Image 1: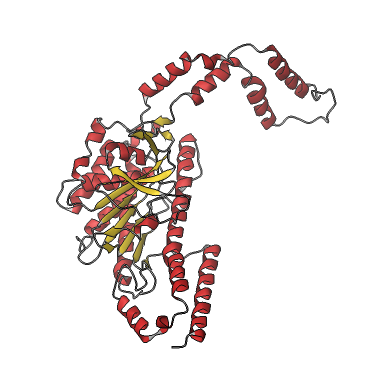
Image 2: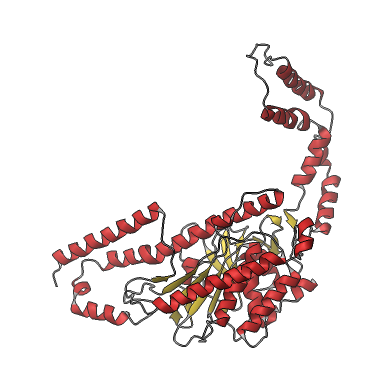
Length: 477
């Protein structure tokens, strides 16, 4: 293991134009003394692109890998500031002209699409009556209604429903726009393109850490993982809604599938199965990480780099801002909730099962059990009950970035990500030796302000106290 006796995982979440934050975080790890390395990389969306570009590099030092990753995004994805002002699109989100033309030809050539493209006198007369009733202050039945000045919303609805909807030409063009067989404004899934060929996927296997990213299987409605080597994926949801499985090796197609957000990017088909972005279902498989094994060991540490936060969302001034908000609001809420659920799972849910399972036995309060707990203080990754009690280090998401694909935002994000990670590393070295035999250790954790979260925490502590008192009464040591 590159970390001596410790096994570490890094999670790089989604966030599109906030990729600079991830690069800055990796830079801080490279600059640390000694450098902080990872045995497992759990990735999604733009975090997968950053993590894979970093790990496919053949540079010798971590600092060189960071610089190469930065140059890949600066030259290949982000646009220069001046050009971005009047062309606010990154360099890889191009329309799929071939698919658009094919979809157009199929739609135009399908006779079924012309059924409504005809004159319908009775329908037209009905719409005309509705329009006259508005002007003449009369219901279609002939009854009078109180006069009311029409609102702007009434006018817009009238144009939509009485003017545009019945118009055969507008109906046809609207169908052509929304019902043609393509599902994304752009496409990046070109495995043989010069851009994708810059990523050497053949370098990922071998003497590398375990690297995997997720994608959502739209056919089976399951979360799938693509990795640089075969990996066991435990079912950590106890048969509940989300199932997970290992799907195959990381390829250019799987990486594109990982970030294929429908409407923004076209979905990706691999081996007859259609995939889209998995980050909006499960950010980076937080829960599964506590059951993942590196060799014969579970993870000792999990470092969280989540780059999207609801505080980053700004008041939109145009459609560019609104489209960015549409994606990032969902990504931020899912990411925040996933972290909270992960904390709850390892801090309360798993531990509460241990308390319930072991409650009522005399051995639990015996000197032998206490000795085992004391010994477990020095054992990272799991306690005497087999529950995960490793260390989680959070890297706080800076709130003052934007979602622009320009060089200025990339550079600013890199600086902020580096500073955020340096602060987390400082806290890590300060608190990493804190004893925590019976529960995970959270370092650099934000104070929880959510009242519901505090209530759950207090209720759990109260339950622990009641169970402990009950065990002491029923089974005195």
